[in-house]
Image (cartoon, rainbow, N blue to C red; front, side):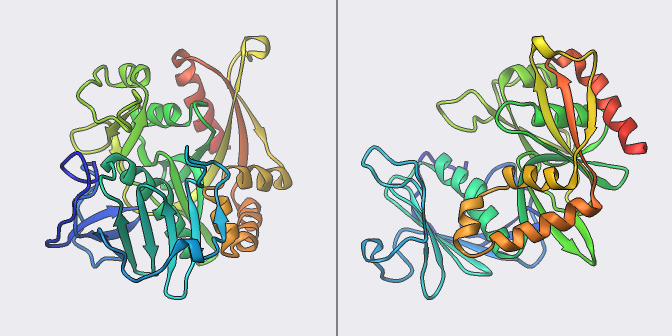
Length: 333
């Protein structure tokens, strides 16, 4: 939970420091219980307040982006504003997030549920902050193999977290489970860590860990749970960036086209760019602030240096050892 109580309420106190996305976050309130502590100087200071940091009226401001998805009241569930002092991500009925390069202010609505603030913060706001810092964020899980990041791209329940969990069970370290930040360093493409937790459905947890009832729910209305990684928990976590070595785009086949085993195909540079654009995080928000061209240039350069493969595999936990071995063999070619 973002807070220890059921709802977010106003409080001030000593700043707590956490590590997420390869950066140190300092907050005036507890963040997620699964975030590791940090003793480094903060890259971003987060303040939770209940009054706006300055006066403005959304009704008199033009949003540069409004989500097509609407609330029951007909209002966009997310709107982005470019104001003179900062950018504002507005989630009506929940919170407004004010973003500066090194500061984030979350102005909470009354009785905003803590789990929703956590979802917005880690799933939308912080990835957008990274994009503003010239990272490119991809919807992917990733593990570290022989010093390089290996990323798995898939939508929905197509198995990227399950495959990553299988790699952890085999002794490799998790880099991220959902948001993969990428950047260019000294001419190379680097993958940054997320945070040491995975999101799994109960059947997946039972396959790898056996018990799940004690684990925190991602959302009170859903069965998916947070699975802490590292320490005396499941697997291990790499908290430092590493070069991006390979990208696999997962494709599941039904019974009609079931292969005898996993198949790996080379993806052309052109198709790889298209796929990476499809799996990019918060694309519309980045486009709204003029970063679409930078994203395209970054991904076009990335596919020239980092091999992209299509991993076609059957569904079922029993196939995971074969899939894992196919990946390891491909990495040695």
